[in-house]
Length: 340
Image (cartoon, rainbow, N blue to C red; front, side, top):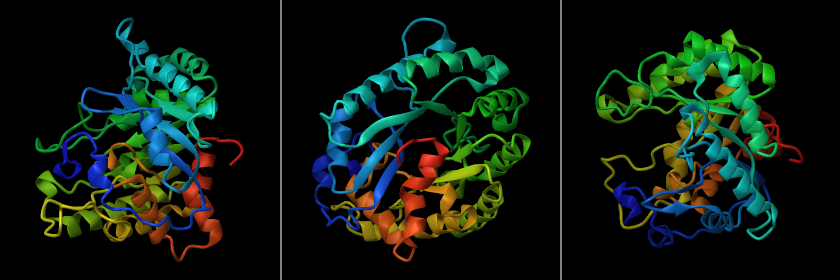
């Protein structure tokens, strides 16, 4: 299954056509967003992740991002996501054994609970925290929605992030010292700012630079999308309780006319991503911005080695302090990771 077809399932042979020297190999990295799963098309568990981590980059710790992995088959619907938390604790225990390298894989995690339950989520949070073995740091709430039917919606309606029940749930997270990861599309970014204003004690982590939509009704309007996205991302960045993850952007658009027989190298990735990432760093500052791999999803388009080399190319002119924040410090603060 070829990775450059856009189908699910990375092709390591294809990715292996681009091997690079690792840039700045000593920079400590906390990867704040990756998944693990066992799915019918392909498997990405500890052995597969360990192989990617053995890239030459100095990844010292990782954060597991919820992805509906290993949910329980039975029991009340609201409790089935406990299966994912239990699964992550087991994968982390495998990492702690040292059998898969020195990286602290899944040292912390964020999971999934139905936030429309409002303040009734609290007992479920207790159970997730217990089952995680102390690794549970918060929830992700995905509310991507667009009125155009050509866009794949993950929410059932508009405005769910700022509904009263979700704000009640977010208030519980804030009171418990837990964070909220938010994934939505760029026209919805003002909702993140509104939630940050409504609950200033809540740490919000915006996923994937705010997910600018470049397909469907937005195809061929890249400059217009960028301008709109930039204004919105600046407003979100002005909220001191919001962090941003840098990554998970398109590399090659459908109209790409270059050589598709080889996967992109880090220079190509850096060139494609630089305007979006530099805008985010300017809006949030390095202290609230963190690079992410988004593996194995990103593995459909480039290797782990190339991905992190691209980030390092983008930060060539950054100071040592700024690099410490972007590659590890911001993630460690947002997710309360000790020893980083």
